[in-house]
Length: 141
Ligand code: THU
Image (tube, rainbow, N blue to C red; front, top):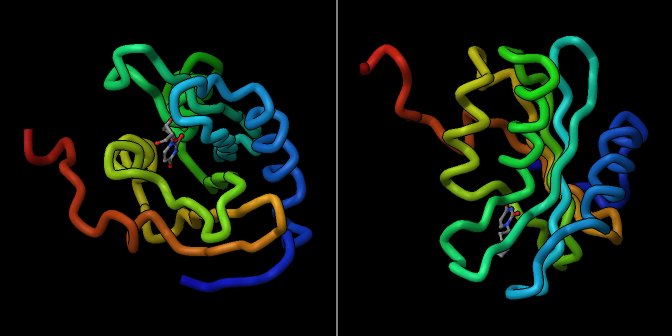
């Protein structure tokens, strides 16, 4: 994991998208606002926020909301980059379920960077391959 202290210029658009989405986070239970933005191979950016639920377990993370939005717009797509934004001192990387769901759209997961940022600009960079080296995939079905 690579760490930098300010939002790199090449992440500006993804950051802005995640930032806008984060403001709309529906998180009355945890109070944790999360925004995510993904870029597809078409060059389009889709975003999402966490959407919580009174049953807790029905909560959807920001990353999965962004993936669902991308599918609604593009159908099958290839994932190029992922950015997650919180206001935590140490930025949040995607949870296990989201790693699996992101990987579904990443035929080359080693080539998909994942950036975790906070509002101060602290930025962690890793890859889907590092986050989920052994996903469950279609070849096992
Ligand atoms: N959450 C995300 O949206 N993304 C993550 O990567 C981790 C957790 C949300 C789920 C829940 O609404 C809140 O953050 C606390 O877990």
